[in-house]
Amino acid sequence: MRKQWIGLAVLALPTLLVSLDVFVLLLAMPRLSADLHASSIEQLWILDVYGFLLSGFMITMGTLGDRIGRRRLLLIGALCFGVASVVAAYSTSPEMLIAARAVLGVAGATLAPSTLALISTMFPDPRQRALAIGVWMMCFMGGAIIGPLAGGLLLAHFWWGSAFLLGVPAMLVLLVAGPLLLPEHRNPGAGRLDLPSVALSLAAILPVVYGLKELARGLSVVPGVVLLAGLAVGVVFVRRQRALAHPLLDLRLFGSVAFRTAVGGMFLGTLLTGAMMVFITQHLQLVKGLSPTAAGLWTMPAVIVTGLSFQLSPLLARRVHRGRLIGGGLLVSVVGLLLVTQAPAAGGPLPVALAFAVINLGMGPLVTLATDIIVGSAPVERAGAAASLNETSGEFGFALGIAALGSLGTAVYRATIDLPPALPPSAATDARDTVTAATSVASTLPPAVGEALLHAARVASTTGMHVVAAVAAVLLLGLAVLVLRTLRHLGPLAPAPAGPSGAQADGSRPAPSAEAAGSRAEPAGFAPTPHQA
Image (tube, rainbow, N blue to C red; front, top):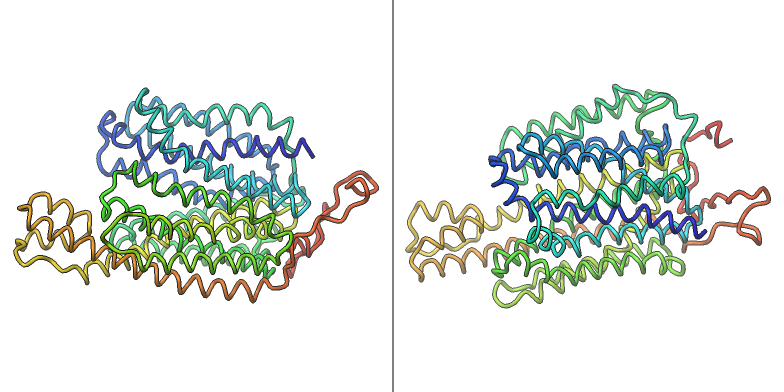
């Protein structure tokens, strides 16, 4: 078992550094944009192309790992990620950097599904698997904790390209230690990869993600049409998967009630809390007037509480029914959202920071245990596909949350802002658009008028945050009730049945029981593959 935990460290280190790399990039954008003379459109592509291709290839890579071997795909992805990171660091033009970021997105799509699937293989005991997933999640959050600090130090002493080199040492460790510590696993009965399905999945996911991201910046016709086109292709993709003997995405995974609830819970939970994270960080800077560094420090309590919740949830699940634990955690997050609705526009950032910490405290059971349920509900041969669905649901949830709840917050801001009478008409039009625009306009006005405008914009922005938090609280309460009803059959995490030595008579590790896995019983319609038989 020691080898498995060392292998988990090998898997978790790249996760931490890739997460850290994302946060450092945000700090490096101003300098790299100036050095490369990147236009505003090129800057958007530098930021977004990674997320687009990461989302688009997630399902394909999860299923490909089941076919060719999860360790093999992980090592290929790590090699490509390392090489692309070096190319990005030494890019001499925006186009070169965008291309490198695109390769990083495709390579990054191999990491999360392969890692989660390997964790499922390495830790067949449900208790250990849930704890391992909690460690893996905490390492991702570790990047959020040290990212701004590491980024500040790097950018103070080195050039902007150093931000892309952080993950290279971890990828080298993975390439060297992976073949020694990580097991290989693949599904020999999976059949050939259906290339038309790959094309359809990209043609569905990429337009949807693009449309959601663009709608988050403002309502317009073109992103809406692109979004609808992606959804239409998605219908064609689903129909093709149902007709294939070896589909890219086996929809029979959704035959498990636990699987459906966990995937839906991850989607809706990420949708609501991800959007609130954006609102709160913007509130700290635009309403409370904090610098990005100070705002980051005020979010530290929430990040630290998240890591603790990730670690405690699997331990509590050994004694508490998982449905009750996840549902109870969601109720805690509802309390945090209600606290946000009471945060005043005036005063310090403490009320919002504490409310944010309470929200994140309650989300720990959902994130760790739902991920375990998703991976554990699938047959071992399809763990990669299940892991890709877990990651894709989170990507879609975050993008949709920013688009939908962001639009709601903007609409409330525009409807409630009480502009000072002395404001010129042109300035009033700009100030009514966003709180960012109002802040910019206020700096050009006489002090008294500018201060009145800032006060009105901050009050309206806070009102928008209150409304979004109230809507999120209602929806999250509904999700808690749904989880408590549909997952009530899942008891506490139980260890996998084993003999005195922890292994079966033939020396192999026992497969977890259906109840212990939460459950790794075959969803309705599954027939065992020859490998399973």
